[in-house]
Image 1 (tube, one colour):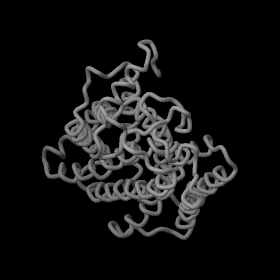
Image 2 (cartoon, one colour):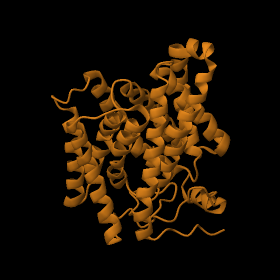
Image 3 (cartoon, rainbow, N blue to C red):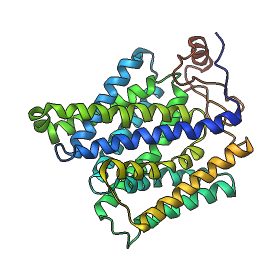
Image 4 (spheres, rainbow, N blue to C red):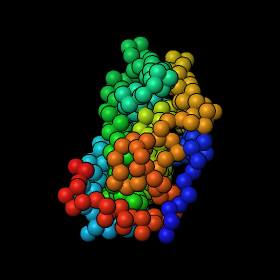
Length: 341
């Protein structure tokens, strides 16, 4: 069976922002649904419900073959799962103190710093610095934001940067979404007991809160995490980090429409800087048809590098089953002692 036909580099440069827009729209809509339930259930409890439902849904859809998972794959999935647990908890707690657009902007700080660290050109570094300036404008003194909310947003930012790196690595180790399903299950095993301790009584008294929890799981976990893995098989972590700059603008719009959250001029200016950085990067990629070395090349599971290595070949396409012959060949090409971690 042949590999799926890879997208041309120019097509990938155009599709990537659309996938990211779908990711952030789904994620921020889920955040709005979550905030609407905070008067009934605590952020900690809802974070656990979100991750628990997401794990059940992904495992039911993907049905990962646990016996075929190697030690390196288990290690990568466990690391991502723990990161997801902390990231979910920190972000949902931050939403309790901050408007959605501001929380999304602070969380973006992690991927932007990662983007700057991985940058290979002055233009890419300038875009990351511009976005970072917007984030700092929100977090510096005089921004009139609760200190605890800013701290939680920064913790979510660290987790988000770690998530980008680990999700990309997991996408290289697994030929499908099995790794993501296992990671979600690992994260749920950590966070769900904490959630049950925090809000188990509320859920027992008002079981209907599980319905918005299910909606949040789909909107804020299953859909965006799947799109993330699809994107990270096509573009490098630097480009992914800057494309996430779309998130604050979408979050601010959804927060205003769904929750009536109004932002100050300073906050809007800060988010405008972040969005401008993302738009600049997208225009450079799509207009030139060249983009990053990693754009337009999908990583074969198990291959190292950032997508620009000579061994980068077409990988699975979202919504399409992986090629079992190709997956078998990848496994055979790795020596028994060759492990990634």
